[in-house]
Length: 292
Length: 145
Image (cartoon, rainbow over all chains, first blue to last red; front, top):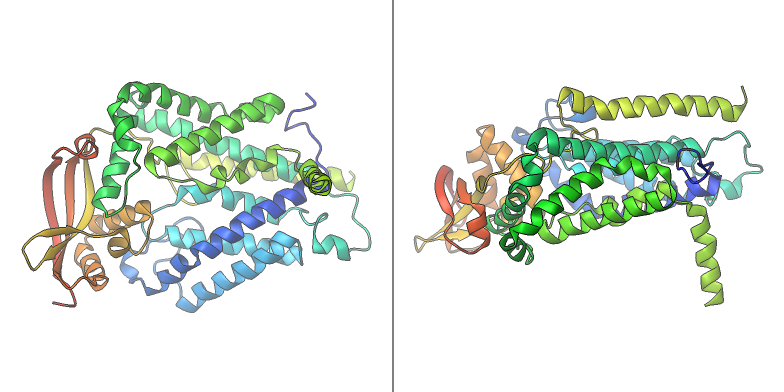
């Protein structure tokens, strides 16, 4: 199937466009989170338990190392985004972001919305992602002709699909059919609102009206599990892909509106970019701007 | 094998490895970062829920809800609730209580209490009385006392 994401062949510009978009998002995220990351230096060691690649750590890392990692990540993130010294900047950005996000998650709360972003960074960082639309490409005398630009994008798509399927499986595994046919979703929405209220935050104004209209939540629960489990359809490309991406995005918008739980990476659509022919977007935008 | 062919072969193995790594937490039921079982909001949940929190105890003898920033030095309720719950589970409620007390700048609050409260969350959202049970795990004076 020509439009299949798995069968498509990608030019270097497609991978480069994903690199730039991912870089802008991840760098912005890291800069916004920098105060939180730097505040970890003031924590007492009691709440620390290493997870993931830091599972071997028994106690927090040196404060100077935290500061250094934040600086390295931000500087390397600029190089990643504009494609400068990418062979160094790419892996440095991905690995420092992996360590920083893992370090933050080692303080008692895993932040699952960072997972896809980190996995995509690792894939793009170790691929030939700066062979086009980059400072490195401008400096190069000639572009190597034996690079594979398709496989990293294909893997990025597969990672998205697997993550959503796992999330769908989790609901059936931990919640069972009760998650779909019972009051579980209503109670999750009420719990999110109550938790915010008890912790001094402001709950979603939509929580109460939706909890009052509980009849609509069972179809919503079924839809969200169906969207997650049907993620492989996006690999078919074309309207299957478009339909699934729209459905997944709407699901995240609904979660954000009802529970004030935001997954910024898919909400800003960056998670879904590798499914699309991004190289067409930039010239189209340029033409629109010229014509406008 | 051409350069592209060799590269595709390498990426094929990378793809198999990455998918294997992503599925492994599901097989072993072990959540981590960035490889996860994605368990958030996946469990069955009744309408009675125990929620960790912290209260300000005023010099008038009343209780005052504290902000996310004071309780957890973060604006993210996931982080604040998750870290407070972990601290309580690990027996560090007094330590966390002292940290919260150190962030209080309201002179009318003379002490902090770290609590676990059981609520009917549906009633809570609807504005009805919801508190079913409260366990005080630690109290500590504020620095202004």
